[in-house]
Picture 1 (spheres, helix red, strand yellow):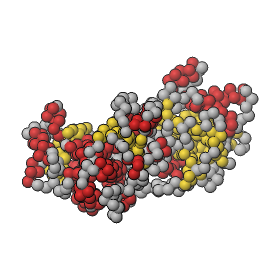
Picture 2 (picture 1 turned 30 degrees about the vertical axis):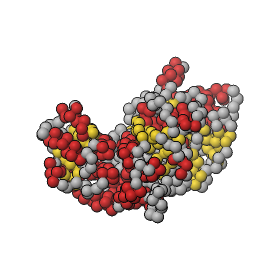
Picture 3 (picture 1 turned 90 degrees about the vertical axis):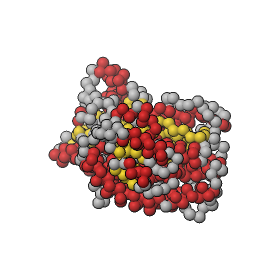
Picture 4 (picture 1 turned 90 degrees about the horizontal axis):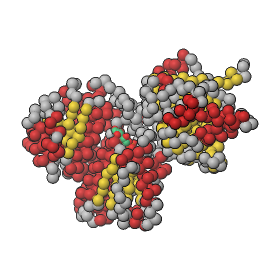
Length: 634
Ligand code: F6R
């Protein structure tokens, strides 16, 4: 979603801001812009130079090449439209009427309508449809008042003005502000949206996410909610909302995300699909190493006591992470024998179930920044803390791919899936890392509850250890098969995925992958549910893709597939090569394996099929329309 970069330094800001924005491109955006404070030494005045462009960053770059934006202090932004269409006028930065105050924002100002109409009544003319534009106008108003009160022009005046405006804003936001009359100063502030400050040599770079700092610095300070930072070439001063100075040292971040590169792959998504054997290998080396006792073979970073007395698990997540959680809940219940429920994070916040005792709440988010998930976790923490009884105490666990994310700061127990930076908006290798982490949890709970014998646990551990090799072979084979099969989808408008049991969430995930990158309408159903309605959609134009692995529901899924075939649907199977699976018009074969680990394999053919269908259509696979990698608004 929106990306912010801002710089105070001694070098020209625009190239550094553009480079930072480029590194945040993966978050998803539809327009971009930047502004610098330009000092005109001849006329002894400063002004804001602002450029904005609809579409890709190259459009902004072209604009700046034509008409430069000089200055050592500046702010930049990639916008993912929420309020107002993705047009140039709505791109950030937004300026006040005098053109002296410029602001970029990531988030949503919930009370913008009221603030806007108050300003309009005072005669302020707006030039965009955004919620953000109220901020520069309000800051400008405060600046005028403070000047009238006799405050001296400078950083402190701007800080006071921004703080007064923050006091009236409702919503979640991160902002960066510059003012032409105080050309050395940058103000940044945040509330429930990420903002980090990087300490370079004689310069400071602020950004929404760590990749923006690669090649700049590893020394990062993350701003906390309701904090404001006043940044000048001399240093960074942090204040709380009451204006009290706070002192906090920056941290050296480890596991730093380096520049990503597509290598020989056409798209990041394909590269990331091919990286999955490595994702599995790294996860196994870290969390399922050989040599640990069979009674506790998983090396998650928690004391044994962390798991004590947990009677129930609730999992909060969105999108692909929710699908991983659904496989996780199946494993926790069916393998480990502990009750587990999955919730849409966005729904949980406003309709939580009644409080149950001794519950572990797990938040799953690859980005660690999903506003819905963070807000749901925080609501759950607060309602449990209010209870004041040990059995209702809040116990939370985060599963993420971003060790330096807001989730990691919000939740004290975190498992980093360690999949490395995922650039493609469609989650693939992070999905695998999340799935593996749930296998780890299921093994832990099965061991603790003695719901499985040590033999069964050891068998599952060995199956997982054999996964990297299986994935390697599977990906190479299916890359070719999927490319070939993708030709059949040139005019397809609807696709149905069927799965059952542990593979039902894989059907949901396959449908999500296909729709998000190819824009083909796709639905995933539990196979047995098709006859209760969706079967009405079927005819020869609607391919039905069935995920069928040997196990308790194998024959059932095959019968459900036959029902589709009888309605002339083109039948594709993600299934082992067996006499029973000859019913499929096309088979995407998976190795014969235990049902328990089958989702780790069945997910692959549909990832590759979605990829090749979208790539054949010439679509922007890595940055599909309207989507964002980090969904930082609710
Ligand atoms: C799908 C996808 C999204 C995300 C969802 C949650 O490929 O990437 O559905 O899974 O937006 O994101 P995280 O996992 O960052 O919370």
